[in-house]
Length: 285
Image (cartoon, rainbow, N blue to C red):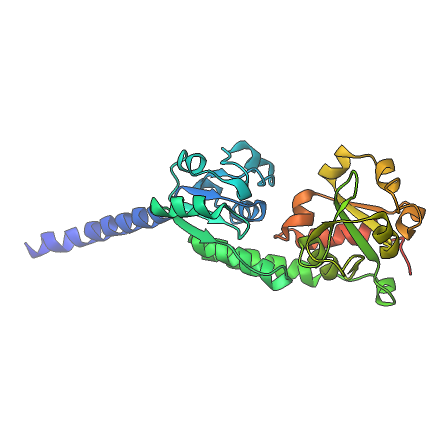
């Protein structure tokens, strides 16, 4: 009898290991909906996309994110749209809403985690860590944080910018009075991380700018999204009222960035900074 028990112990141990493995796998198999382009990008960065069942329409990177079901736009979610994919976990940004819909989703016992951090270098790293924690992907999260930190460490601000940083103006929408980004916006934070300054730092948030204000801002370069540029020609940008007398227009200096790079402040922010530096390499005060 003792011999039989001794022979059974290895088998019991193997069974217990298998059960533990299955339990661990189950904890990673949550049905997740990610709301916010940066959040979704981080999920893919962590190689946790197998947990995703849907995302919102602002989730445009990587390309694979465009091939999964969409639950609407993050600011105008509907409970029906989210519930249709039967999620267990909803990852959102502070911009997600409306609040009434989020409460309805909470009432159905869906776990909701808000990925919230300031628009700073440390804030970007914290967003990655928060998503990793929510998805039980802490090991992958630590590696991603290390990689992003190294990418930041490799950046060098052009020497000419130390004399006077270039004044950049981010134009979100054109036509009529252009909508530009002031303090407290992602482009404003991106400009400062790149070593540049915001030509309209005196305003807060996104505001339409009058021709007089554009002239006073005297931007050295205009920054637009690639998506925005497809809707408006470069000529249309330079012909905006008040633009012709700015240094940017005189030099025809235009910087284009992918929308999520300009507006997301996510894992690819070091790359966004590199693109700004490259596109302004001929600028000098």
